[in-house]
Each structure stands twice: as C-alpha cells, then as structure tokens.
Amino acid sequence: MLVVSGEAASEPVVSAKTGTVYERRLLEKYAAEHSGREPQTDHVLGEDEIIAVRTDPPAVRPRPPTLTSIPALLSTFQNEWDALVLETFTLKQQHTQVRQELAQALYQNDAACRVIARLVRERDEARQALATLQAQVPATNSAAAIGSDTQGGGGSGARQEAPPAGDRGTTMDVDGAAGDEEPRSAEEKYYATAAETAKRLSAVRMKREAPAGLVSAEAWKIARVASVVESLHTSTKPGITSLQTDGTGDLALTGAMDNHAEVYSRSRDLTLATLKGHTKKLTAAVWAAKGGSDLVSGGFGARIITGSADKSVRVWVPKPGNAQAAEGTAEALDLRAVGWTKLCVIKEHAAEIAGITVHPSGEYFATAAVDGSWAIHTIDGDTIVSETLGAPLTAIAYHPDGMFLGIGTAAGQVKVLDVRQRQVLATLDASPGSSGDPAPVRGLHFSENGYYFATTCDHEVAIWDLRKQKKSRSWTCADLQDSPDTPPFAAPARFDGSGKYLAIVHGRSLHVFKVKGWQLLASVEMASAAAADGSSDPKTHSTLADDAVEAIDWIGSSSSAVAGATKLNSLIYFAPSENN
Image (tube, rainbow, N blue to C red; front, side, top):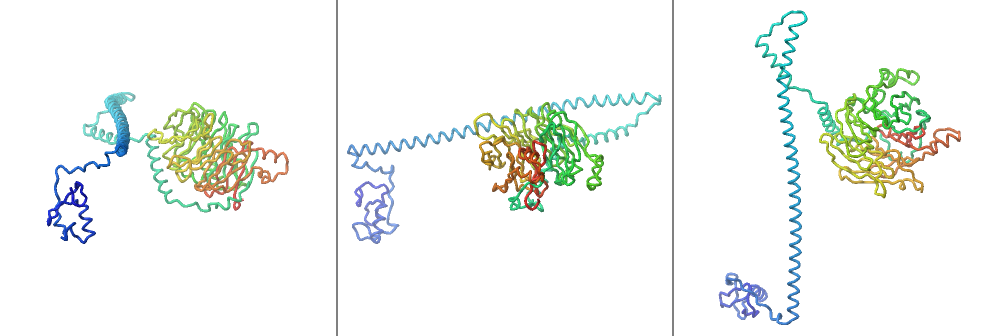
C-alpha cells in the first residue's frame, strides 16, 4: 500500500533517500506543489532520485469496495454490457467492409478474366486469319505463274524467254517491298481522320474566343420577327420537316412532306433549286463539304445530303454553274445553271431514315433509322460502318470533336457511342419522369463547347453536362407557356455556333436563352409574324397566327438571327434589335 493514497500502485517508484514506495503520478504532483519536497519529510527529491519499481506481472488494481452493493454491481454489469454491444457493432461494421472489399475484388477478377478471354479469342482469330492468308499466298503465286506462261505462249505465237535468275530475284524483291506498304482500309482511314480532327479541334477549342461580330445578349432582349417567306414547297402536302442554314447565312436548306428538298436564298428572295428523287417525305436534309473546305463558308460549293421515309439517303453535288453563281448578282443569276445533281443513292437501311449528321472533318457522315440501325458513310456515298442498336432510333448527332456519336431512341434514352470500340460510353434517360410510356427523343444537339448537349422530347427540353452525365437545366411545356392547352415540343432545341445561346421553340413562340446562367433573353410570338410580313389580308394574318414552327437553325457564326420553318411551308427569320 502507498503512503499517500493507501492503495496499490499502478506505476510504483521508490525514493532513493528514504526508500519509501510512492505512486509516480501522486509523487510528481505533490513535489510540484511543495517545491520538490518528499511527502512527510523535508528532503528535496531530484529526477535521478526517483527509482521506478518493475513489477512482473503488473499490479492489478483491486476491485473498489463499492462493488459490494447490489446497485453498484448492476451499474458495473450495465457498463460491461454496453462495451460488449459496442464491440459487437464494430465487428459487424468491419465484417461488412471486408465483404464489400471481397465483392469488389471478385468483380475486378471477373472483369479481368473476361478481358483476357476476349484477348485470347482475338489472338486465336488473328492467328487463324494469318494461317489462312499464308496458305492462300502460294496458290496465288502459282496461279499468277500459270497465267504468265499462258499469256506468253498464245496469240502472236512469239515465244517469250524467261528472265535471268538475277532479274527474277530483283522483280520479286520489288514486289515484296511494294506489298509491305498495303493501303489502309476505309474504316481505318475513318478512325485516323477522326483522331486527327479531334486533336486539331480540341486544341483550337482550348484557345477559342468569341466570333467576331457576335450579337450581344442585350441585343437579343429586343428580338422580333424580321421577315416571313411564304409558299415554299408544294401546298398539296404542307409541312417542312427539316431546316439547316449554310455558313454564309444566305442559303436555307429545307426538307418537306412533299418528298422534295429546296434551297432558298435570303438575299435574292427566291428558291434556287428543288431536289427531287425521293418517293416519300423527307426526314433530314443537311449541308456537307468534302474535305471540310466549305464546311464553314457553305454556299454554292457545299454538298447536300437528304434522308427520307423511303429508306434511302441521297448525296447531291453542286452543278458546275454554281461557281459562277456564287459571285454573280441577282440580276445576272441564271437559275438554269444553278443547282445540285444526284451523286449517289444509299440504301443501307431497311426502315425510315431518322436523322443525318456530318462529321466535323467534312469527309464522312452518319445516318440512323427507326429500325435501330446506324451507319457511317464517306462523303462520296461508300458505307464503311454499319451497326444496330436494340431500340428504334429517332435522332443522331456527332460530338463537336467527331470522336463520339450521340443517338436518341424512341424509348427516351440518349446513348453516347465510341465508334471505334463499338461501345456505349453512357446511357442517359432523357424522357421526363412522368407516368405512362417514355417519350421519344425528338432532337439531339451538341454545343460547340463540347460538354453541353440539348435533348428535346414531347414535353421537356433538357440540357445535359457530359462531364457529370446528368441534367444541368430543363424546361417543360408549362415553364414556357402559361396555358392549360400546352402543345408538345415539335422543333428540336439548338445551340448557336459560338455556344453562347440556346434557342427553343414551343408552339408559336421562340425563346432565346443565354448559356450557363440559362437566363431567358427573349420570347418572340409568331403572332408578330403577320405584322413583319406587311400583309393587310386578314386571311394571311389568320394563317400565320395559326401556324407553328417545326424546325429551327441559327444563322451565321455571329448568331445574327434564327430561322424557323413551319408546318404551313413558311420560313420565318427572327433577329435581335441591331440585326433587323
């Protein structure tokens, strides 16, 4: 027992002067309060005069006498029970964590086994193909030799002597060297072009500045209908289904229910060409340029690609007279020398064409059909990739870098595809969360910045962030029109060429938003189109007021206006205040 506390010491020490045993903690505390003196004496202890006592085994503190009562025992049992339960809970947590880690390890092992199996299978297939090719080479050489002998012995009756052995060896060496440089397949050329284009465009996008002359957000706040063009296409089958303006902002390409595509010139106020050949309504019509040379400028030198419900895709090339017409005036323009002629017809799909999108390089374009098939073609009409997804397709669009494809389905999903790997990188549910069947994706459009894209369904327009793979903003029909009778969205939403603005059409109104903050800049009613048309005929006013926009597109790189095509074959130009 200790002198100070009268209890057994947990850390005993001995005074070198008196030989008395103390608890170290109590001795140090007493010495600190009494100028270093030892208890019950006047001796001053130093650190070297305090000697630790080694106990083996360590001293066990006896149970306090308070545990002799029943309440004290119950309290002790409760404390021990709580400690036991806490320890059990901790063990369960550790057990669950170990199970999760084990499951993750098993999943990774399974994935690794699958990858290894696929690589082994591809290796075996490559070996088999190589063995087959090696077996075919001797037969091919033999056939070539037989053909040479036959050719030398017939016809004129002249006998050809075999070249010397040295010459034969030289010839074989040359042929072998030429065989080493086999041309790449069309699919490999596409992948190389796509990678090169993506690298170039990504580098430019990092340093990209706003286009010169870009219309300010303040100007768009005072937008109105600038002009109206009526009576496009034939009136027997009204309805414009697609619209795309060229890079100059002058030419508008429209596809309609009358099975035709038309090219309208805004500056000349006339239809320059009517492209006939499809047997059913057009579902897509886009500008394209071989080599990308005219992809920005557009105009008379660009090609045209059209898709139809007749399951075919047609590529149209400009006539020779287009080069002179591009530099001519309205008075000198000879319409008979201007136009586009059919280059080829592609019948890769077995169902209605759902969409067409042109690769940023201008060398390729992709098509999608409602039967779930999609394909990639050269600008000259050769199909190089053809695949099928497990759902009907409704929209297709290239990413601005050209490495990925975005595809919309009738099930309300958007799939982002890696074409080279034939792999779905992301599947996003674009259909609004409501009861009933999912709404199909009516439109899909990527922003120039590369990470935003807009989807249009019947009752919602949504902005998606590819980096997070989730919605950044969405608008329902009720958000844009405070009316009990709200029609569905018909025209796909479109970003402008600078990636600064977004245009949405709902019913008879155009809405322009500023990107990122998604601030509404302008809402322009189609009812004002009658005033812009300048007509005093009540019938004309009524027709325009009852019309609805079915497709829209931005005009020019400066986003100076928005063109809208209507179901009654009209073309409406919306413009901000400084571009009216």
